[in-house]
Image 1: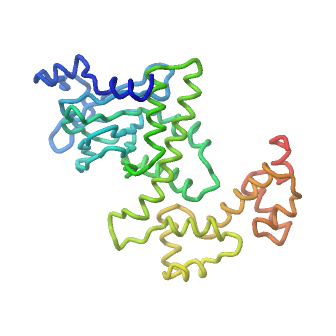
Image 2 (image 1 turned 135 degrees about the vertical axis):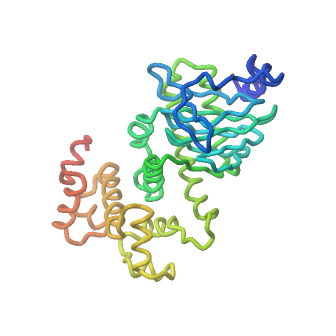
Image 3 (image 1 turned 90 degrees about the vertical axis):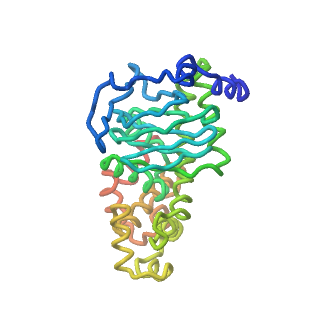
Length: 325
Protein backbone atom coordinates (compact mmCIF):
# COMPACT_ATOMS: atom_id res chain seq x y z
CA UNK A 1 0.00 0.00 0.00
CA UNK A 2 1.26 3.49 -0.85
CA UNK A 3 0.01 6.98 0.04
CA UNK A 4 -2.34 7.12 -2.97
CA UNK A 5 -3.93 3.73 -2.33
CA UNK A 6 -4.16 4.55 1.39
CA UNK A 7 -6.13 7.70 0.62
CA UNK A 8 -8.49 5.80 -1.67
CA UNK A 9 -8.94 3.10 0.97
CA UNK A 10 -9.75 5.62 3.73
CA UNK A 11 -12.31 7.53 1.64
CA UNK A 12 -14.11 4.40 0.42
CA UNK A 13 -17.48 3.86 2.13
CA UNK A 14 -17.78 0.75 4.26
CA UNK A 15 -21.01 -1.29 4.24
CA UNK A 16 -21.88 0.17 7.66
CA UNK A 17 -21.28 3.72 6.43
CA UNK A 18 -23.61 3.14 3.47
CA UNK A 19 -26.31 2.14 5.94
CA UNK A 20 -25.61 5.13 8.19
CA UNK A 21 -25.76 7.47 5.19
CA UNK A 22 -29.23 6.09 4.43
CA UNK A 23 -30.36 6.72 8.01
CA UNK A 24 -29.99 3.18 9.39
CA UNK A 25 -27.96 4.11 12.46
CA UNK A 26 -26.19 1.77 14.86
CA UNK A 27 -28.21 1.07 18.02
CA UNK A 28 -25.86 1.77 20.91
CA UNK A 29 -28.59 1.07 23.49
CA UNK A 30 -27.84 -2.65 23.27
CA UNK A 31 -24.37 -2.07 24.69
CA UNK A 32 -23.08 -2.06 28.26
CA UNK A 33 -24.01 1.08 30.21
CA UNK A 34 -21.10 2.36 32.32
CA UNK A 35 -22.84 5.36 33.89
CA UNK A 36 -24.59 8.62 33.08
CA UNK A 37 -23.65 12.19 32.18
CA UNK A 38 -26.24 14.97 31.96
CA UNK A 39 -29.03 12.37 31.96
CA UNK A 40 -27.48 10.50 29.02
CA UNK A 41 -26.31 6.90 29.19
CA UNK A 42 -22.54 6.41 28.98
CA UNK A 43 -21.62 3.24 27.12
CA UNK A 44 -18.53 1.07 27.42
CA UNK A 45 -17.26 0.52 23.89
CA UNK A 46 -14.44 -1.41 22.27
CA UNK A 47 -12.00 -4.02 23.45
CA UNK A 48 -8.52 -5.17 22.53
CA UNK A 49 -7.83 -8.15 20.34
CA UNK A 50 -5.86 -10.73 22.28
CA UNK A 51 -2.12 -10.09 22.19
CA UNK A 52 -2.35 -6.63 20.57
CA UNK A 53 -1.14 -3.46 22.26
CA UNK A 54 -1.85 -1.00 19.43
CA UNK A 55 -4.98 -1.14 17.28
CA UNK A 56 -5.95 1.17 14.41
CA UNK A 57 -9.36 1.87 12.92
CA UNK A 58 -11.05 4.61 10.95
CA UNK A 59 -13.98 6.34 12.63
CA UNK A 60 -17.26 5.53 10.86
CA UNK A 61 -18.85 8.55 9.18
CA UNK A 62 -22.47 9.74 8.90
CA UNK A 63 -23.50 9.22 12.52
CA UNK A 64 -22.77 10.51 15.99
CA UNK A 65 -21.19 8.37 18.70
CA UNK A 66 -22.86 8.89 22.10
CA UNK A 67 -20.97 9.43 25.39
CA UNK A 68 -18.78 6.41 26.04
CA UNK A 69 -15.63 5.19 27.77
CA UNK A 70 -12.82 2.77 26.90
CA UNK A 71 -10.47 0.66 28.98
CA UNK A 72 -7.60 1.88 26.77
CA UNK A 73 -5.97 5.17 25.80
CA UNK A 74 -7.30 6.56 22.53
CA UNK A 75 -5.36 8.87 20.21
CA UNK A 76 -7.43 10.43 17.44
CA UNK A 77 -5.79 11.91 14.33
CA UNK A 78 -7.74 14.07 11.89
CA UNK A 79 -6.60 12.83 8.48
CA UNK A 80 -8.90 15.26 6.69
CA UNK A 81 -11.81 17.56 7.49
CA UNK A 82 -12.83 18.16 11.09
CA UNK A 83 -14.73 16.45 13.88
CA UNK A 84 -16.44 17.57 17.06
CA UNK A 85 -15.18 15.91 20.23
CA UNK A 86 -17.24 16.22 23.41
CA UNK A 87 -15.05 15.35 26.41
CA UNK A 88 -16.53 15.35 29.91
CA UNK A 89 -19.32 17.50 28.49
CA UNK A 90 -16.95 20.05 26.89
CA UNK A 91 -17.15 20.52 23.11
CA UNK A 92 -14.06 21.12 20.96
CA UNK A 93 -13.15 20.57 17.32
CA UNK A 94 -10.32 18.46 16.00
CA UNK A 95 -9.12 19.82 12.65
CA UNK A 96 -7.03 18.33 9.85
CA UNK A 97 -3.53 17.42 11.02
CA UNK A 98 -4.39 17.67 14.73
CA UNK A 99 -4.27 14.92 17.35
CA UNK A 100 -5.92 14.37 20.69
CA UNK A 101 -4.93 11.92 23.43
CA UNK A 102 -7.92 10.74 25.48
CA UNK A 103 -7.21 8.81 28.64
CA UNK A 104 -8.92 5.55 29.48
CA UNK A 105 -12.24 5.88 31.34
CA UNK A 106 -12.63 9.48 30.10
CA UNK A 107 -16.21 10.15 29.03
CA UNK A 108 -16.25 11.39 25.44
CA UNK A 109 -18.56 11.55 22.45
CA UNK A 110 -18.04 12.15 18.72
CA UNK A 111 -20.11 14.51 16.60
CA UNK A 112 -21.54 13.83 13.15
CA UNK A 113 -18.91 13.40 10.44
CA UNK A 114 -19.40 13.81 6.70
CA UNK A 115 -17.80 12.27 3.61
CA UNK A 116 -14.54 14.25 3.87
CA UNK A 117 -14.17 13.99 7.66
CA UNK A 118 -11.66 11.17 8.02
CA UNK A 119 -10.59 10.51 11.61
CA UNK A 120 -8.14 7.76 12.56
CA UNK A 121 -8.40 6.09 15.98
CA UNK A 122 -5.19 4.73 17.50
CA UNK A 123 -6.11 2.54 20.46
CA UNK A 124 -3.25 2.04 22.88
CA UNK A 125 -3.17 -0.47 25.70
CA UNK A 126 -2.54 1.47 28.91
CA UNK A 127 0.26 -0.89 29.96
CA UNK A 128 2.12 -0.25 26.71
CA UNK A 129 1.92 3.54 27.01
CA UNK A 130 3.04 3.63 30.63
CA UNK A 131 5.87 1.11 30.47
CA UNK A 132 7.44 -0.08 27.21
CA UNK A 133 6.82 3.14 25.35
CA UNK A 134 7.74 5.75 27.96
CA UNK A 135 11.15 4.17 28.52
CA UNK A 136 11.98 4.78 24.86
CA UNK A 137 11.34 8.52 24.92
CA UNK A 138 14.30 10.81 25.45
CA UNK A 139 14.80 11.38 29.17
CA UNK A 140 17.44 14.06 28.58
CA UNK A 141 14.82 16.72 27.96
CA UNK A 142 12.90 18.28 30.84
CA UNK A 143 10.16 19.10 28.34
CA UNK A 144 9.90 15.38 27.48
CA UNK A 145 9.66 14.55 31.17
CA UNK A 146 6.98 17.23 31.61
CA UNK A 147 5.01 15.67 28.75
CA UNK A 148 5.33 12.20 30.29
CA UNK A 149 4.23 13.52 33.68
CA UNK A 150 1.28 15.24 32.02
CA UNK A 151 0.14 11.93 30.55
CA UNK A 152 0.45 10.27 33.93
CA UNK A 153 -1.06 13.12 35.91
CA UNK A 154 -3.95 13.65 33.52
CA UNK A 155 -4.50 9.90 33.50
CA UNK A 156 -5.31 10.17 37.17
CA UNK A 157 -7.96 12.79 36.42
CA UNK A 158 -9.62 11.11 33.42
CA UNK A 159 -8.78 13.80 30.90
CA UNK A 160 -7.12 14.57 27.57
CA UNK A 161 -4.35 16.46 25.81
CA UNK A 162 -5.00 18.14 22.45
CA UNK A 163 -2.09 18.77 20.08
CA UNK A 164 -2.39 21.64 17.59
CA UNK A 165 -0.15 19.80 15.16
CA UNK A 166 -1.59 20.95 11.82
CA UNK A 167 1.69 22.71 10.92
CA UNK A 168 3.89 19.73 11.77
CA UNK A 169 5.81 18.56 8.70
CA UNK A 170 6.73 15.14 10.09
CA UNK A 171 3.55 14.02 11.83
CA UNK A 172 1.49 13.26 8.68
CA UNK A 173 4.48 11.40 7.21
CA UNK A 174 4.78 9.18 10.30
CA UNK A 175 1.02 8.62 10.52
CA UNK A 176 0.69 7.77 6.82
CA UNK A 177 3.54 5.27 7.07
CA UNK A 178 1.97 3.70 10.16
CA UNK A 179 -1.40 3.36 8.41
CA UNK A 180 0.16 1.85 5.27
CA UNK A 181 2.03 -0.67 7.40
CA UNK A 182 -1.00 -1.50 9.55
CA UNK A 183 -3.38 -2.08 6.65
CA UNK A 184 -0.77 -3.79 4.45
CA UNK A 185 1.70 -5.41 6.86
CA UNK A 186 5.21 -6.39 5.81
CA UNK A 187 7.29 -9.26 7.19
CA UNK A 188 8.65 -7.11 10.04
CA UNK A 189 5.41 -5.25 10.63
CA UNK A 190 5.31 -5.40 14.43
CA UNK A 191 8.73 -3.78 14.83
CA UNK A 192 7.99 -1.14 12.17
CA UNK A 193 4.67 -0.19 13.76
CA UNK A 194 6.29 0.03 17.18
CA UNK A 195 9.02 2.37 15.97
CA UNK A 196 6.63 4.52 13.94
CA UNK A 197 4.43 4.97 17.00
CA UNK A 198 7.44 6.13 19.02
CA UNK A 199 8.25 8.62 16.25
CA UNK A 200 4.67 9.91 16.33
CA UNK A 201 4.73 10.47 20.08
CA UNK A 202 8.22 11.97 19.93
CA UNK A 203 6.95 14.53 17.42
CA UNK A 204 3.98 15.22 19.68
CA UNK A 205 6.46 16.04 22.46
CA UNK A 206 7.83 18.77 20.17
CA UNK A 207 4.33 20.00 19.38
CA UNK A 208 3.43 19.89 23.07
CA UNK A 209 6.25 22.22 24.08
CA UNK A 210 5.49 24.68 21.29
CA UNK A 211 1.75 24.41 21.86
CA UNK A 212 1.78 25.19 25.57
CA UNK A 213 4.02 28.17 25.00
CA UNK A 214 1.82 29.73 22.31
CA UNK A 215 -1.73 28.59 23.03
CA UNK A 216 -2.36 28.99 26.74
CA UNK A 217 -6.04 28.88 27.69
CA UNK A 218 -5.44 31.79 30.06
CA UNK A 219 -3.27 34.48 28.41
CA UNK A 220 -2.18 35.75 31.82
CA UNK A 221 -0.92 32.32 32.88
CA UNK A 222 2.85 31.97 32.96
CA UNK A 223 4.20 29.20 30.71
CA UNK A 224 6.64 26.85 32.39
CA UNK A 225 8.05 25.46 29.13
CA UNK A 226 10.56 28.31 28.51
CA UNK A 227 11.78 27.89 32.09
CA UNK A 228 12.40 24.17 31.54
CA UNK A 229 14.28 24.93 28.33
CA UNK A 230 16.33 27.58 30.15
CA UNK A 231 17.24 25.05 32.86
CA UNK A 232 18.26 22.50 30.20
CA UNK A 233 20.67 25.02 28.67
CA UNK A 234 22.02 26.58 31.88
CA UNK A 235 21.80 23.85 34.51
CA UNK A 236 25.55 23.90 35.26
CA UNK A 237 25.55 27.44 36.63
CA UNK A 238 21.95 28.63 37.00
CA UNK A 239 20.31 29.46 40.33
CA UNK A 240 16.69 29.88 41.35
CA UNK A 241 17.18 33.59 41.86
CA UNK A 242 19.02 34.01 38.54
CA UNK A 243 16.37 32.08 36.63
CA UNK A 244 13.54 34.04 38.26
CA UNK A 245 15.33 37.29 37.42
CA UNK A 246 15.79 36.20 33.80
CA UNK A 247 12.01 35.69 33.48
CA UNK A 248 11.23 38.75 35.62
CA UNK A 249 9.20 36.86 38.22
CA UNK A 250 9.44 36.34 41.96
CA UNK A 251 11.62 33.34 43.01
CA UNK A 252 8.94 32.10 45.43
CA UNK A 253 6.33 32.29 42.66
CA UNK A 254 8.63 30.34 40.32
CA UNK A 255 9.14 27.69 43.01
CA UNK A 256 5.37 27.32 43.38
CA UNK A 257 4.80 27.11 39.61
CA UNK A 258 7.47 24.47 39.14
CA UNK A 259 6.10 22.36 41.97
CA UNK A 260 2.52 22.67 40.70
CA UNK A 261 3.23 22.00 37.03
CA UNK A 262 6.10 19.48 37.17
CA UNK A 263 5.88 18.00 40.65
CA UNK A 264 9.54 18.92 41.27
CA UNK A 265 11.38 21.73 43.04
CA UNK A 266 13.90 23.90 41.18
CA UNK A 267 16.73 22.09 42.95
CA UNK A 268 15.35 18.69 41.94
CA UNK A 269 15.01 19.75 38.28
CA UNK A 270 18.64 20.88 38.24
CA UNK A 271 19.68 17.55 39.77
CA UNK A 272 17.65 15.59 37.20
CA UNK A 273 19.28 17.47 34.33
CA UNK A 274 22.77 16.99 35.77
CA UNK A 275 22.24 13.29 36.31
CA UNK A 276 20.77 12.72 32.84
CA UNK A 277 23.68 14.61 31.28
CA UNK A 278 26.15 12.54 33.33
CA UNK A 279 24.39 9.35 32.26
CA UNK A 280 24.72 10.35 28.61
CA UNK A 281 28.45 11.06 28.98
CA UNK A 282 29.08 7.76 30.77
CA UNK A 283 27.34 5.78 28.04
CA UNK A 284 28.57 7.64 24.97
CA UNK A 285 32.14 8.59 25.92
CA UNK A 286 35.12 7.03 27.68
CA UNK A 287 36.15 10.15 29.60
CA UNK A 288 37.11 9.74 33.26
CA UNK A 289 34.41 10.03 35.90
CA UNK A 290 36.06 13.13 37.39
CA UNK A 291 35.75 14.80 33.97
CA UNK A 292 32.12 13.71 33.72
CA UNK A 293 31.49 15.35 37.09
CA UNK A 294 33.20 18.56 35.99
CA UNK A 295 31.30 18.58 32.68
CA UNK A 296 27.92 18.52 34.41
CA UNK A 297 28.80 21.18 36.97
CA UNK A 298 30.31 19.34 39.96
CA UNK A 299 33.71 20.47 41.30
CA UNK A 300 33.47 18.14 44.31
CA UNK A 301 33.91 14.57 43.01
CA UNK A 302 32.81 12.98 46.30
CA UNK A 303 29.57 14.97 46.23
CA UNK A 304 28.98 13.92 42.60
CA UNK A 305 29.42 10.24 43.54
CA UNK A 306 26.96 10.67 46.41
CA UNK A 307 24.27 12.31 44.25
CA UNK A 308 24.76 9.85 41.39
CA UNK A 309 24.35 6.86 43.69
CA UNK A 310 21.23 8.36 45.26
CA UNK A 311 19.76 8.88 41.79
CA UNK A 312 20.78 5.64 40.02
CA UNK A 313 21.39 3.32 43.01
CA UNK A 314 24.93 2.57 41.82
CA UNK A 315 28.24 4.36 41.31
CA UNK A 316 29.17 5.98 37.95
CA UNK A 317 31.72 3.22 37.27
CA UNK A 318 29.17 0.52 38.07
CA UNK A 319 26.62 2.22 35.82
CA UNK A 320 29.11 2.33 32.96
CA UNK A 321 30.22 -1.31 33.39
CA UNK A 322 26.60 -2.56 33.65
CA UNK A 323 26.03 -1.23 30.15
CA UNK A 324 29.14 -2.82 28.72
CA UNK A 325 31.38 0.22 28.68
